[in-house]
Length: 103
Image 1: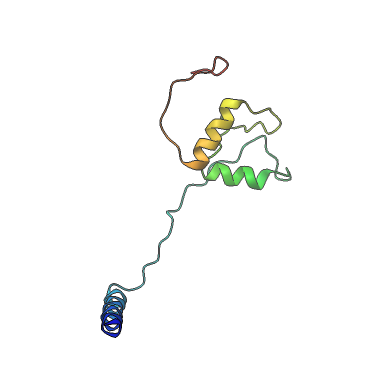
Image 2: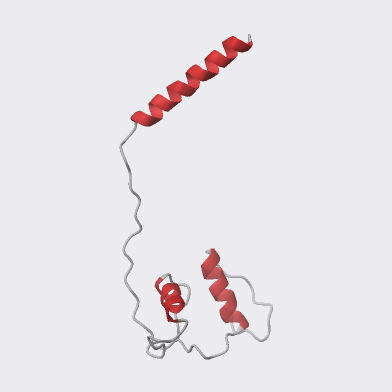
């Protein structure tokens, strides 16, 4: 009985392997070419965090303030939540329970 069950399972497995290898050819997935965002005017080329800022800017995680990024400015709690939301792909809105964060 065990031999018969093993033989049946092996037959099904081999059949599935043949079917899956016959379908299609090679498919290469590529990301669409994103437009490179403009560099921030206040981030010098020799600034230590420029590569990370440019990377996050190109991915839409940080957007700056117009043409400036303000790298020396303190980040607010609301700005940090926006960045984390973009990193983890959260969307939507909720009611704001905090008095110190503008709507």
